[in-house]
Image (cartoon, rainbow, N blue to C red):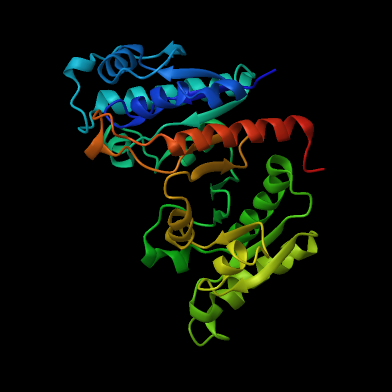
Length: 322
């Protein structure tokens, strides 16, 4: 039986509706899963009529009653942000009940949801809140590279003070468990990126490697995890992608992991929330307000997010990681 994937529509004034319509008409996607959209039917029909998406028949749970003719494409509104969050809430409810096998989310705007009264940095934090999950990890993935983040959306100046041994260990552990459970890797090889140049050069350029990261690595090793010591980030991605020494890289902060990931997978990168009691993937891009409702948005990342979700569902059901 094909898995059922729930897709949340994201911000109605962004590219979410368009990339969803383009993806549900994809014959390959239709073959591998059943799609249920959680969103606004009027907005989808309006866009479908404008862009005439080929064979975009779909199932939808209509959760908001917005007037698409009154919406301003690329201009976030509180009503739209609240609607977008309601789609997520319903999707989580359905996933926890087992009504859908996984959630794939279209983009929301972090500033817009905060202005609408939601004090969360984005999907990841809100999903953790809704599922009462304390330990979770953001992973970004493509065919050639997977990166997990110890810290997520934080200012660079704050990173050294935010790094904690327990959080580095948590990220290593959840990454290891997820590679086994969802990606069929029986014995994951995990690289850990250093924070400082040359991995700190024995404290010359910083002591976070010695005092924070290495203790976490040693604890992970004691748990039987195949993990590297802190490696200079100017070489660890080469060793992972080109030499294929590792299955994933644990990174200390957002851009450390996302720069190489997006260099390789700008169009087909996938955002995955690890550690939740449900499967959630997402596009690896934002609302793209500048091109919203113009019919030119690329659905490649949405397609990849659905394909990844399907792979994860199948792996979980078969216990592929052993």
